[in-house]
Length: 172
Image (cartoon, rainbow, N blue to C red; front, side, top):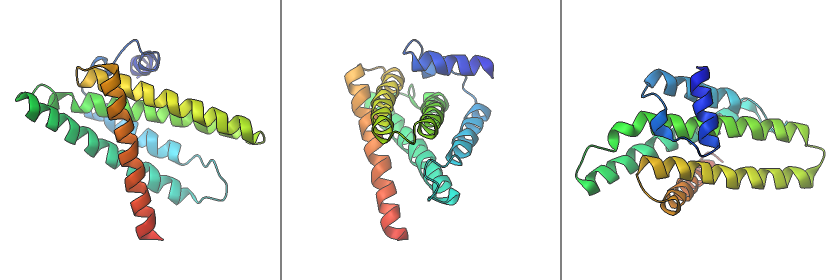
C-alpha cells in the first residue's frame, strides 16, 4: 500500500501517470472507501454528514461512469480495445488523487477556518492544481496532449457539478 501511496505522490508531482498504478479492483475499492471516509470530514458544521456522504457517492458514481464512457468512446474512435483496459488504473488514479486533495483541503479548511480570505484563496489554488493533476492523468490515459487532458478534466468537473445541481433540485 505504501508503494501505491508513493505512486500517487509521484502523480501529484506529474512524474508518473495512472499506467504506473496496479490494475487492481481491490485498490479501486479501497480508494472508493477512502473517498467516502474523507466525505465524513465536515468542513461546515451546519451540514449533516449524510449530505457529505451523498455528494461523495455522487462524485464517485459520476467519475466512474465518465471514465468508462470516455475510454469506450476513445476505443470506438480508434477501433481498438487499447483504452478500455486502462479503466481500473484511470479510476484509481482520478479517485485516489481526489481523496488526497480532498483530505488536504479538509485539513486546510479546519486549520484556516478563522481566516476566510486565506481559506478562499487556498481552495481556489487547490482546485486549479487538481484540474491540472487530473489533466495529467487524462493525458496519460488517452495518449494525448496536456491541453486535451485539461479539456477532459474540465469537462469531468462540469459533468460532476451538473449532476449534483440536478440532484439538489430534485431533492429540494
